[in-house]
Image 1 (cartoon, rainbow, N blue to C red):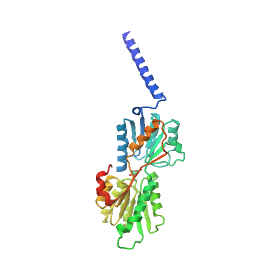
Image 2: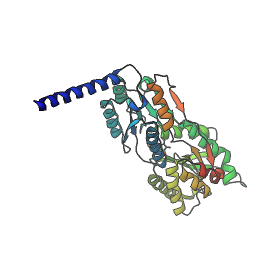
Image 3: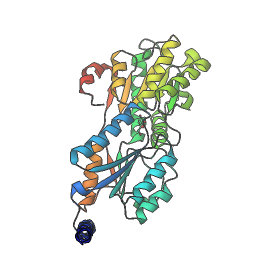
Length: 332
Ligand code: AHR
């Protein structure tokens, strides 16, 4: 008899607890920050930039006491889609994600919308036309980054490479980022925008280095093998590929930063070290420290506030002349 009573009391207690939880979860009141569950579908760990970005997303959640479910897709879109669907199934409050490529997101974005889960795009955008599928895009203007890289080249090439000579054709090779990704597409476009009207700047080779140091080195080796001493400039869509290419250039017996001018994007610490050593000429900043902006948007959403459709990060350009002074200030 006592056993039965204990059992009945236990069930009653559990029911009371469950009902209480549901009530608080279903109430119209905005949730407390500590109740929020955020799912974040990250791309992978292809670069120093990405590692810093992941660190920013994870550490900022801890700092704000927000529960984070984090998934690393290891560079595969199908893994990101799986993670996305699992966040929907778990009924998280907000989904953040950095799409590995621009296309192919319509179905999962619509599933999230139908489930009433807001989506925030972090770092990269998608090429869907229905903008109601996400709340905002937080991150850099990649076209502007490509334009800044091209502008620096046009304004500085003569001074750096041929101060005492007439400038003739400038042969450029380009290392692109992940095929189909927003930064690769936009940095490709932005650089060409800047070069338009400057016919002596010629892009003689362009190929993907997948945003990784190893692939950057491999592709630069191939460029050097086929075009050798003809190459005047390397434009790399990120610092990791540029750092890999520097190794290839040195192994080929040329001086990176002198024989071949190197322009890259991201402004990670490794790039500043290479600039301080005179091996990289300029890096265009692309900040990975998006955690604070992301959770500001999450919290604003939970409070029911309206968020701008695009939140652009403020960034600069760092030529090698400022590298040594800037190095101690770098946060990534
Ligand atoms: O989307 C941002 C880009 O992705 C960074 O420039 C690159 O390093 C990263 O992998």
